[in-house]
Image (cartoon, rainbow, N blue to C red):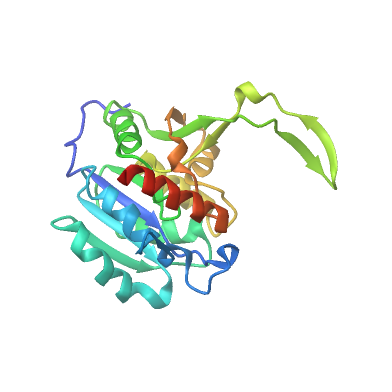
Length: 235
């Protein structure tokens, strides 16, 4: 636990993972640049981050889209420092590349551009937990489906649903903890999220309330659902 709370804005950097392909969306365009209500997913995500109180936003973009993403995001980031780096072969390596750009900010929130509709309140809960002294915090929602562990098309066991949460982003960390977690991972590419790397260090990860709107855009149905959510917000 930290001895004193940091400055609520100057101490926070945001990392945005946006280098993934759009293959499962059935698009030739990188996923983060696919349009939702006429604007790229990445723009929706960064516009929200710009409203939560951070000093620096670092985006991992498709390597051939770095300049295009910089031009796209500059109008919505305003006075916030913006850096766009070339994404790597995996999400984990892309986040690690972003961490090398954030400087000495004390806190880091890591967000997926593929989750463009996360409400401001979720960002607020994550940041509040960090400012209160948490070293790692993730938003999550209780799982409502029955979950079974399966191998070779055979059910091995049914998991206790009451203990399961679907974890979302933004995930928040102290910079020291997150950098250490990525350093310990070396060249490994198979981490499903940054919290998994931090867990491997034995660091306590807190959970705050997520939101149904924090779902990840993976396939065409998700994009259709996101269109409906935005239309409902507009009405």
